[in-house]
Image: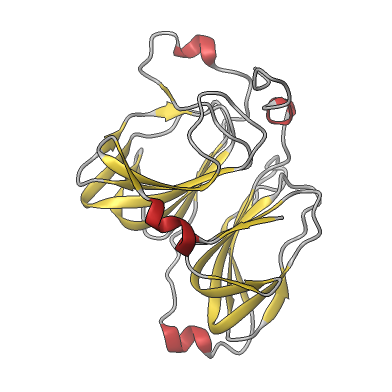
Length: 254
């Protein structure tokens, strides 16, 4: 289990192209690695990111601003999932820009644009899952703080063949506790603090801090801070043969 405090990492935001980036787990890489990779992207006004794919499974959490992902409106807050070697996009920011988190259980080697001439030669077998969750609305402070029971909402349903992949939202009043989801039969998951705070092992994590729970870890106990907690849990599917070998040798497993 690994955690990162967004409050501590946010001051390290840097300019990248027309947008900005905050690395949370890992860093930019041109080779795939077994290490976690997570970051925040802030797209500038009307910025466009061409349709592309990555060589690892990933979630994206659209958290601020407005825009679209392919034909889908990126409602705030929305989760998007794409399997490795599965094209999606374009991502188009609205006039006020658009911010999102990218969450990966392994480090990607950089996007591959669908417009590249050799793109078909770079594709690998994949289930080509591509999903967008229902939108999540956060509670106002007094409502969240005074929730009397833990509420769990499924915003991305697990379908037949998804092998554990789902997204859930937990809403908890001040001081409430509940176990995180089981890890067995999954590829691990991220817990994303969206509102209030999460207390783990005596450490308080504020919004948009992250906790990654591996499929071999015991599910942690989630405790809400004094303001309550709203957290998203994005569960990866069981890793297929490709994902298992990413990063296992000095050439990145490719």
